Length: 152
Image (cartoon, rainbow, N blue to C red; front, top):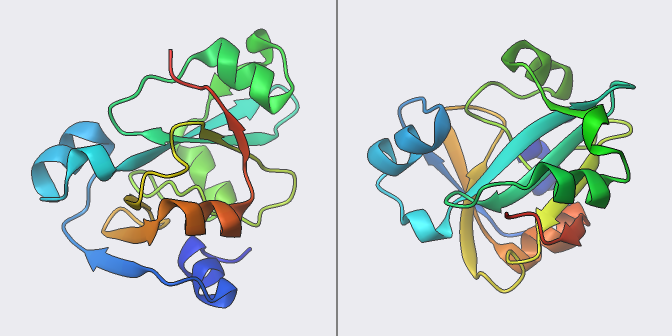
């Protein structure tokens, strides 16, 4: 499995990496990064009952609607749960570093419909001590996610 950073490099997409103290969660992102909150994407990691990973990328201030995400991922709501921190290593990422960029087999990636056209965004790199800066439309071109209204 290739790291999100290496996948971005291999794609040829222009992006920057920001190194910083390790962060975990929205509060750390808002208080320790010094980056504009309205430009941050969080990636939430979910699992289905059959073990499939579902990555949901949305603005850091948004709240994911589980039913909306389940519908976009093609599963029933009762088959979807948030992944445990220790499960993230199966995707090659660390807690606080979840990324919407993945080449893991069978991963379903869904972006909130508000992401296209956001301009420059900041998202996880796979590590809690680095953040990716990239144009949202370029990120979508690289990842090729499903788009859906995820925020409740």
